[in-house]
Length: 186
Image (cartoon, rainbow, N blue to C red):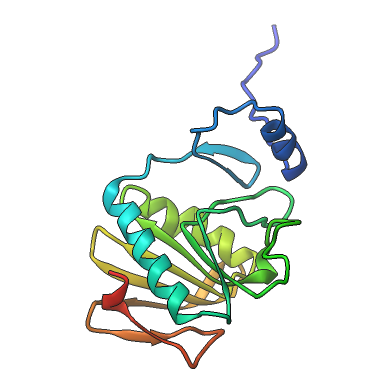
């Protein structure tokens, strides 16, 4: 008798979209496609949601006309990943990305708000974003009440890593004239 082991079925973006169009997943499902795997994401709590709202309000006003804010919408990363980050700043595009999902080249800033997903955001998502050359990745760390900033992607990691507190401020790498007070988003 030959031993048979369970095998994962990895999917790609095209199959993922067909499943969505076919209504395979309930509308309230919070799913992401990460490196070919369909992952169930944690429910969004009120503290998490409030921080996403704060990011959206502050960064939308700060970048008005220089970037398109996107809240919990997909970004296509290669053929096997389509995460839905908590917040994105995207390069201006006349159709506001109504004819396609943005890809890595469109991203100015990608932000994950983390409490229960901190380890996943620091490991798997960090590698995913760095390997697709997302230029600036922030983790709003609700556990330690700080902002983790990752820049200069190279070989699946970020060369520049810093941890900022409410007393700090920073400039966006792609829009250096814009200064962000960390207290305004924490």
